[in-house]
Length: 170
Image (cartoon, rainbow, N blue to C red; front, side):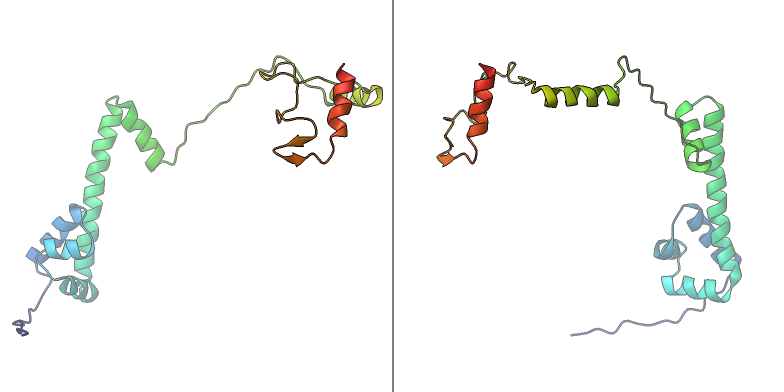
């Protein structure tokens, strides 16, 4: 069963009391429907009032501006009183300031690309083998820890390279 709600048409005018309520709600930081309800208006009433009377829009804007000015003054006083964190926040958020970051690296040994290429070429031409497996915990054997002919039951595709390397080491 649907009950009909009583409808009473209210005529809203931008009186001084209504404008003060809009101002106070905006000064608290409220927006939209919350602002309207805090000002004792329905959201549709506030929208109509702002549409037809520019003083309602001005009251809202003035409330926001006064609140921002008051909070800015509090922040500025705290920064000037020596609160470094507040001072940095004011600089970052109001003045788009960013602290510079310096990275200093000291390189004690310079790398020469030409020297590295020359050493690599000498290794290729002379056939120098660098044994990198000396420091391994499992010794210089195969990395798979399997016999040379298979790993996990599958034959290696080229076991000659492993045998050749083993012969060169001995």
